[in-house]
Image 1 (tube, rainbow, N blue to C red):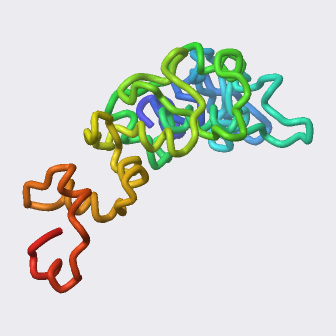
Image 2: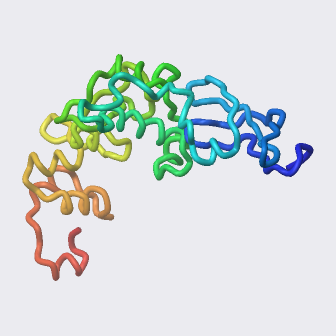
Image 3: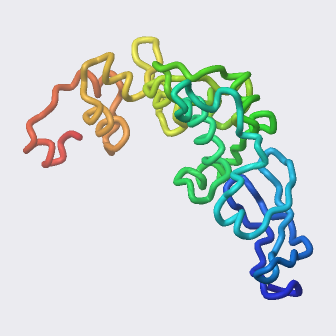
Length: 221
């Protein structure tokens, strides 16, 4: 590390909800010298931690994630808290599989919701029949007014990758169109999304499925 002894420079690195701001003066211990770091929690509170605390994520935060509704009566982590954790992880943790997709689009968690108690006050307990946290505007941030508890189908229908098709005066996603018409989603996807032929929605729905040999010959998708 440049200019501050033998310790590796952790400045700018993320450890759980902590981001290292700068190195503080080291502390002498019985076993040698302990490196100390000024760290900023995701909620913006700051605290001085040592390298071991950062590596072990202990403490995991300044305490902002603790709330009266963090656990169930049986002592288990509540479903609402797990949803909050997932939201924070997607927007802050590079190790989260979805992190790059959220940061690439500039999606963040508002300052108020960086504390679990505030999130709970705005969203309430997660309903058992609506287990997902869904952003109403998929290009918007996690914030009050732009989120709802939703079923998995509702969330899937709201994904930014969904195409919307007009049929008999109503709008349908591909999955809903398949459910409404009884035509398989695979056939509709093949005809409306992948085919080089100029399929209309009506044509894709009304045309019978052809034998496989004709499909392979390229007459239809």
